[in-house]
Length: 268
Image 1 (tube, rainbow, N blue to C red):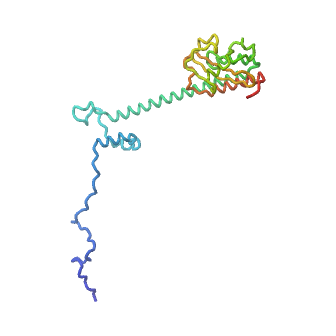
Image 2: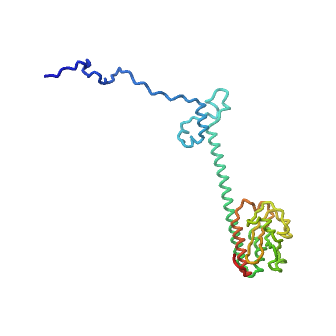
Image 3: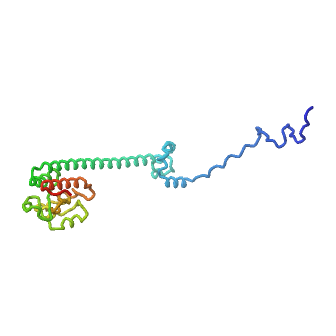
């Protein structure tokens, strides 16, 4: 026996309320809403606020069409005001390359200068260690080091007489008590001056030659008075406050230990 037909069936036999497949004449679905149009001014403003965008999306540069250098794509009569994007990018890259080249040259020059200074200080230390007597040490420090370090004058200054005979020694000078602290400051060991009018108290008769100097505090220990290693150059800017002082400090430390060894002074 056949089942009775549902009185609510559609004429085509489908159940009432069931989804009807879309036929060829069915109305299409509405398209998705289009994004709002951006004006050129909005695009330009966004790019200006995000200058690194193209750097992170380099593939877009191949899709952009830069204006012609002759203004072919611009309005008539305005070709001379159209910027060549390619020329702009090339000029910018050339400027970057130029800056990098100058920076590289400066770094190389500074590296060579540092290597040269380090070599000079090493030679100066070896010269001090080669002294065969205390007098020979003083001669090396005040005479030989000038040529080794490529400066014009080197002197040793003491705030009081360490030995009476040293007062008459060339390159050795005496200073009043407290003079070194006045020059350097109580807590400072090294002073570099790019522009210095040579002080006769430090450099003696050759002071007029000095246009730049480096002053290194010397502490010998025991009852020995404080001292000063003074390096003078006729070249303005030969020493500068921005320069490193590690090598000069090392040289001063070697001089301190050499004096302590020759005079049998207690180590600090």
